[in-house]
Image (cartoon, rainbow, N blue to C red):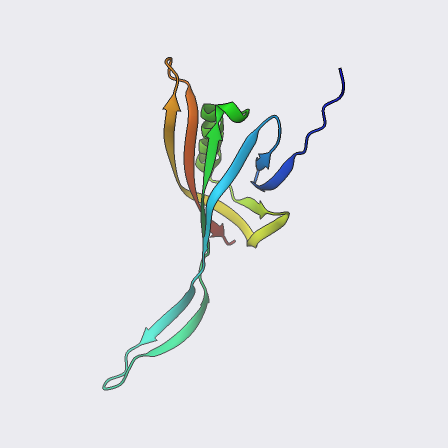
Length: 139
């Protein structure tokens, strides 16, 4: 019996949750979107157009989906429960994509929705999609 060589590709992580492609488990992200906006005040001027005043940067947000599939080495229900625990703990977490931090600090989960795409005949979740929204956490 020869040794098996397989490649593990780490895409990134959200705190303790690692996004990875490997022989034993696949947890990938899709539809990654980052939103940024500045904060502006508007001062109305009688008889003229309003004047804008730069207040500073706004809070960034990130959203993405995670595909969970039992055929790819994961238990989708356990993965979903783990994500819910992170969200309910209210902890600020680092977001790393491609070995580089996203943003200037930490992120909090502000919204999460789950779709239990398929189940077996006794209610085990076989495939699931979870949509996660994060916002920057500023101390």
